[in-house]
Length: 183
Image 1 (cartoon, rainbow, N blue to C red):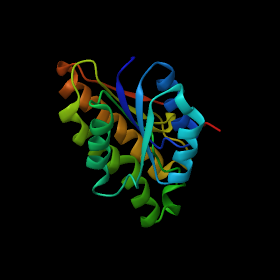
Image 2: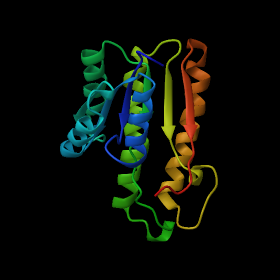
Image 3: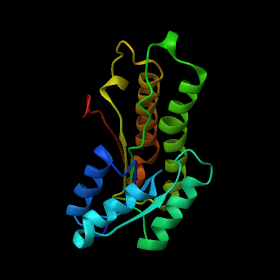
């Protein structure tokens, strides 16, 4: 892992911060992203010289963000080996209580944005690269109140399986990690 370069979305807290720190401990150079520059700057200060970390504060749903992230990783670190799609919306509820606005938010953050980031990154990924989705057990099996959240997480599984079939022969791994509820 030493010397590889990763993009981690939703990097500034919770699971994302743990992923950044875990990759850094293995010698991976990380470009993190999130909406809040102050949180990303705090993470950069916290990791200090223990790892190579830089960030781009951006809305993952913005049309220009995937290219901006990939270009920043290449410009800063010279390559791209790992994409971790961690950013997500926890906007969930029963189907009958899900508004179009709630549905659109979940689709934008957890389906459209990671699809577009993968599409942009694939031109730079080679043998030994990996694409990881931080999904949810709610994508594997339905649950009361899952609504749009479960729907999109199940869709991520389909995308990961498709990318594994399409790009596995190039040595690009695609994996879905399905944690349960995380504090």
